[in-house]
Each structure stands twice: as C-alpha cells, then as structure tokens.
Length: 382
Image (tube, rainbow, N blue to C red):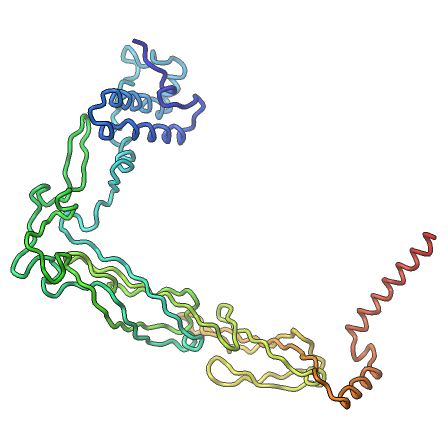
C-alpha cells in the first residue's frame, strides 16, 4: 500500500511556513490523540501518520530531501522517517500542555498540600494635600487568615494530614500510554499530596478562616494618581499552612477645589478685574502647603498669561526635588454696570487708540485691508 503525501496528511500546501506547519500539526494531533479517542484504532493510526509526517517536515534537511525525492528519500536506510526521531518527546511537550493543562510549574505548593494565598487589592482615595505631605493610614481588610484552632493544617487538633495513598504524596499520577508516559494531577488529593481524614471543625479543613484585620499603610509624600503600594505577606492566608499572598494598595487622588496636577507641577486659574489687568496689581492665592502665595500682575496683562511660582508644587516621590505652581489669569469682563460706569467706559472707549489697544486695533486694520482687497478685485472683474 503506497504511503500518503506528508503535506496532504497535515492538510497544508508545500509552501507552508514552519509556524503554519506547527499550528496545523498541533491542531490535528490534539484531535486524533489516543487519550481523546480511547479504543479508536483509526484515530491512533492517523495520530501516528501525523507524527511521522511532522517529524520529517519540521526538519529543514529532511524536508528538502522529501520535496526532491518523496518517500524514497527515507527508504533503504535513507533517512529514518518512520515515526519518531530522537527529539520526539520534546516535540510533543507543547501538545501535552494543551491537552492536559500541565504547565512546567505544576500546582503551587507541589505535593505538600501547601498553597500560596491569593493577592488582595484595596482601593484608597486620598486628597491632594495628603499626597503632598504623606500620611499613615489605618485600613480594615476582610481577608483569610490561618486558622488558630488547627494552626493552618486543616486537620483536627491532635491529628495531622496523611500522605495520599493514591499518589504516595507526590500529588501526581503517572500513566503509561503507548510510547510515552503522561503525568496527571491526582484526583484523590487534587494535587496536594495529602488527605485529611478528620478535618478541623473551625475551618472545615481549609486551614484558614475569614477575619477583619486592621493594617497601617505608610503613604510617602509625592504619590500620584494610580500609585501602587505593596504590603508583602498581608494578602490572603495560604491553604493548609501555605505562605500568604500580598496586599496591593491602589491610590487615587480626589479632585481639588483650586489645583489641577500635572506630574509634580500644580496649575490654577485665577480671574482678575479689567482694571487690575490694565493698571497692574497683585493678589494672593492659596498654596498646597497650607500657606499663601503672592502674585504680582504687571499693567497690560492679557487673559491666559501664566505666572510661575518656583518650588510651590508637589514633591517628587523619593526625591528632594519640588515641582512648580503655575497661576493662569483670566481677565473678567464687567457685568451689570451702573449708568455712571457705562458713561465712564464709553468715555474711555472714545479716548482709546492703537497704543492702548494694539492687538484689537491691529486685527481690525488687517480685516479692513482684506475687505478692501476683495472690493478691488470685484471692480477689476467688472
């Protein structure tokens, strides 16, 4: 009986890339694996065909020989393409992981029954002032702690967990299947390697119970929105005496009444009167340290101008540097004027010139030139 074409067996074209070849093989190998089709001789035959084809085509030299001479390249002792090469077990390691979920690390805690506790997250909102100064906060955390009655073993006081008889305490069972051996999690002890005949009544054999704990959290000065603080070993207690997880504090900053933060710099917007902007003056603004900062405004100040106050911003985390504070002014247009105020402003407008209002005068001068240019072009077209 003639042998089928290797490319046909794997369902790929002769131009297939190595990555596409591997993907096609993995898909078909999992589909026809003997453990997924117990007692199915046809699947077992297809599985061996797939393995033989892939063993040849995955090797650059063997594939080149097969492309040139076909199956004859491996007959008469030519290449040994029948079945499984010396690295066959390595080739199948990825497939075993896909089929049975057996990663290299195995179950946490191995065969000792000890499993590391889960990490916990706690969200905390602080004010900008607290981020500036730093603080020590007290928080309450509902979490799992080691059972005091059984000291975290999960077994009734006076007894101990016993090695699992099914796996001998290894947590895994080996199973021979044809030419290779599979390792599976022990179904009796669920991979823990131990069984508890008489569980602790206080924790139902888990080795941990739920309690509320009070913890102290040190928040350093200069923390930003989204900063994460890790408290090692303050997470959930491990199962049956396993190590605890960690606690992560995620900080968020509450909106501030005056300031917006940009890294270590602070920004605020201050409205000033038209008279102050025109004549000059000064005003005070609060600073993040609880004090006051004085800002001097020169005459002729326009809306949007920023004034920088050096080192009046936020501290840089774990540094002695300080950010700056930026004050942006907005000139406020007077509203609800009295008759006298209107008369005074009208008089001021009559006395205004290009020198007193150069920006608006320049703008409208350019507008007039623009319209004059349009009129001239219209006359020429007529």
